[in-house]
Image (cartoon, rainbow, N blue to C red; front, top):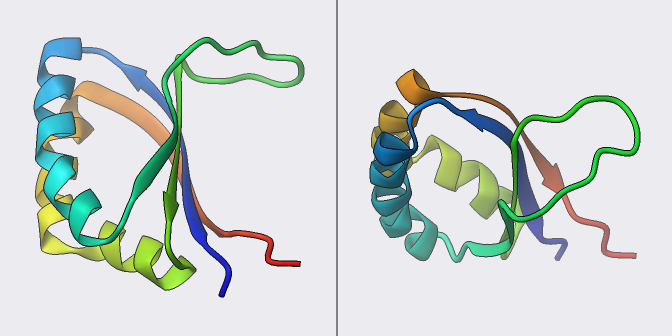
Length: 97
């Protein structure tokens, strides 16, 4: 079974409140088996444009990635992030070939 991934590109306007979001997302991430592959860190744009922060989160399956995003616990965390950041995020199925 292929894993699922969240790939997020985020600009954070209020880092202090964003920390509240990070604390709040720990519960649903643990519940759905999330593992951070990339969490911020140094980045170099070689083509196109990017936001200030890139995050890649691995889940045991594509369905787990979808279910985590839609879960009430994650939506509560996301409600903390939305007013203090701008994000582009996709959920993608990993290659299992």
